[in-house]
Amino acid sequence: MIYRVAGRTDVPAIVALLADDELGATREIVGEEVDAAYWAAFEAIDADPRNVLIVADHHGEVVGTMQLTFVPSLTRGGAERAEIEGVRVRADRRGSGLGRSMIEWAVEQARERGCGLVQLTTDKRRMAAHRFYSRLGFQASHEGMKLPLRRG
Image (cartoon, rainbow, N blue to C red; front, top):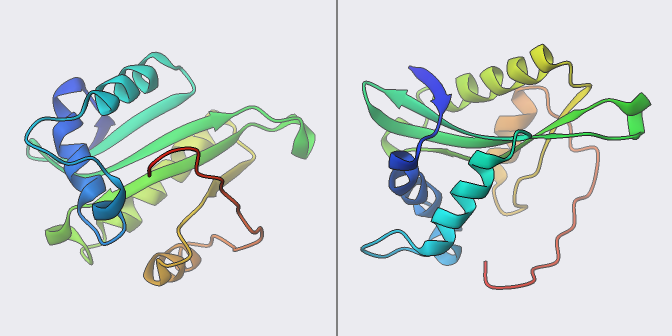
């Protein structure tokens, strides 16, 4: 398994991963062609040095994805924090240990960068994800809130 920065050719596979679950199926834009909004988002992420879109590549196939965002902060003594977002593992690879490996890899990237904290959010309806992240040492220490401004 190789973890690498996603390229433009990976976008269709990433979008498919994002849509391939009960919640994603209701909020992602799926069609024959990748929607222009995803291409614009990819370009913005790719151009931003504080954002990294990662794919788990197994013999040339994208089997997982996540986005890492490095956030400067005045809290915690001015420590940068890493945010892990959009974690997905292809359905046929779930339960294989890939998700654990991906998160451990992301935490190590944050550690190497000198981050003081790794944070993530997960939908309250994803109870299995809550158990998964807890087993990896994450604590549900804060209540997250979101305000949708448009579809999704």
